[in-house]
Length: 109
Image (cartoon, rainbow, N blue to C red):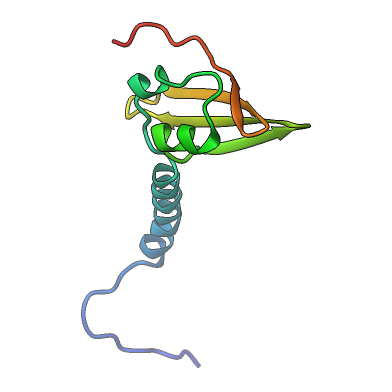
Protein backbone atom coordinates (compact mmCIF):
# COMPACT_ATOMS: atom_id res chain seq x y z
CA UNK A 1 0.00 0.00 0.00
CA UNK A 2 1.23 3.49 -0.83
CA UNK A 3 0.92 6.27 1.75
CA UNK A 4 -0.31 9.43 0.02
CA UNK A 5 -0.09 12.77 1.85
CA UNK A 6 -1.94 15.82 0.68
CA UNK A 7 -0.20 19.20 0.87
CA UNK A 8 -1.76 22.61 0.61
CA UNK A 9 0.14 25.22 -1.37
CA UNK A 10 2.95 24.79 -3.87
CA UNK A 11 5.39 21.94 -3.49
CA UNK A 12 9.08 22.77 -3.11
CA UNK A 13 11.50 20.27 -4.56
CA UNK A 14 13.87 18.75 -1.98
CA UNK A 15 16.86 19.68 -4.14
CA UNK A 16 15.96 23.37 -3.88
CA UNK A 17 16.16 23.28 -0.07
CA UNK A 18 19.31 21.15 -0.02
CA UNK A 19 21.05 23.41 -2.55
CA UNK A 20 20.69 26.42 -0.24
CA UNK A 21 22.68 24.89 2.62
CA UNK A 22 26.16 25.16 0.99
CA UNK A 23 25.39 28.70 -0.14
CA UNK A 24 24.30 29.68 3.36
CA UNK A 25 27.41 28.05 4.87
CA UNK A 26 29.68 29.93 2.45
CA UNK A 27 27.94 33.21 3.25
CA UNK A 28 28.34 32.70 7.00
CA UNK A 29 32.04 31.83 6.54
CA UNK A 30 32.62 34.93 4.37
CA UNK A 31 30.86 37.23 6.85
CA UNK A 32 32.87 35.79 9.74
CA UNK A 33 36.13 36.34 7.83
CA UNK A 34 35.16 39.93 7.08
CA UNK A 35 34.25 40.56 10.69
CA UNK A 36 37.74 39.62 11.88
CA UNK A 37 39.55 41.86 9.39
CA UNK A 38 39.70 45.55 10.11
CA UNK A 39 41.49 47.68 7.55
CA UNK A 40 44.38 49.58 9.09
CA UNK A 41 45.61 52.96 7.93
CA UNK A 42 49.06 53.07 6.32
CA UNK A 43 49.50 56.61 7.66
CA UNK A 44 49.17 55.27 11.20
CA UNK A 45 51.54 52.38 10.49
CA UNK A 46 54.17 54.91 9.36
CA UNK A 47 53.90 56.60 12.79
CA UNK A 48 55.08 53.50 14.68
CA UNK A 49 58.52 54.06 16.21
CA UNK A 50 61.14 51.88 17.86
CA UNK A 51 60.67 51.81 21.63
CA UNK A 52 56.88 52.31 21.56
CA UNK A 53 55.08 50.30 24.22
CA UNK A 54 52.42 47.67 23.52
CA UNK A 55 49.79 50.11 24.81
CA UNK A 56 51.06 52.88 22.48
CA UNK A 57 51.07 50.51 19.50
CA UNK A 58 47.56 49.25 20.22
CA UNK A 59 46.28 52.83 20.71
CA UNK A 60 47.74 53.84 17.34
CA UNK A 61 46.94 50.76 15.24
CA UNK A 62 44.01 49.12 17.01
CA UNK A 63 43.81 45.46 17.95
CA UNK A 64 46.11 43.23 15.85
CA UNK A 65 44.60 40.40 13.84
CA UNK A 66 47.27 38.01 15.05
CA UNK A 67 50.15 37.86 17.53
CA UNK A 68 52.85 35.29 16.76
CA UNK A 69 55.20 34.34 19.58
CA UNK A 70 58.72 33.00 18.95
CA UNK A 71 60.90 32.56 22.03
CA UNK A 72 60.91 35.99 23.73
CA UNK A 73 59.76 37.92 20.65
CA UNK A 74 56.24 38.76 19.56
CA UNK A 75 55.18 39.67 16.03
CA UNK A 76 51.99 41.77 15.97
CA UNK A 77 50.26 41.46 12.60
CA UNK A 78 47.48 43.55 11.02
CA UNK A 79 46.02 42.27 7.75
CA UNK A 80 42.90 42.41 5.62
CA UNK A 81 41.70 41.59 2.12
CA UNK A 82 40.41 44.37 -0.08
CA UNK A 83 37.20 44.01 -2.11
CA UNK A 84 39.42 43.37 -5.17
CA UNK A 85 40.97 40.38 -3.31
CA UNK A 86 44.35 42.06 -2.68
CA UNK A 87 45.87 41.36 0.73
CA UNK A 88 47.29 44.18 2.83
CA UNK A 89 49.39 43.47 5.91
CA UNK A 90 51.93 45.04 8.20
CA UNK A 91 53.72 43.61 11.24
CA UNK A 92 55.86 44.91 14.06
CA UNK A 93 58.27 43.00 16.28
CA UNK A 94 58.05 43.47 20.05
CA UNK A 95 60.38 42.30 22.79
CA UNK A 96 59.91 42.94 26.50
CA UNK A 97 56.78 44.96 25.73
CA UNK A 98 58.34 47.46 23.32
CA UNK A 99 58.62 47.70 19.53
CA UNK A 100 62.08 46.47 18.47
CA UNK A 101 61.67 46.23 14.67
CA UNK A 102 59.54 48.07 12.14
CA UNK A 103 59.16 47.39 8.42
CA UNK A 104 59.88 49.87 5.69
CA UNK A 105 56.62 51.44 4.58
CA UNK A 106 57.00 53.32 1.32
CA UNK A 107 55.11 56.36 0.12
CA UNK A 108 51.40 56.30 0.78
CA UNK A 109 49.30 56.47 -2.39
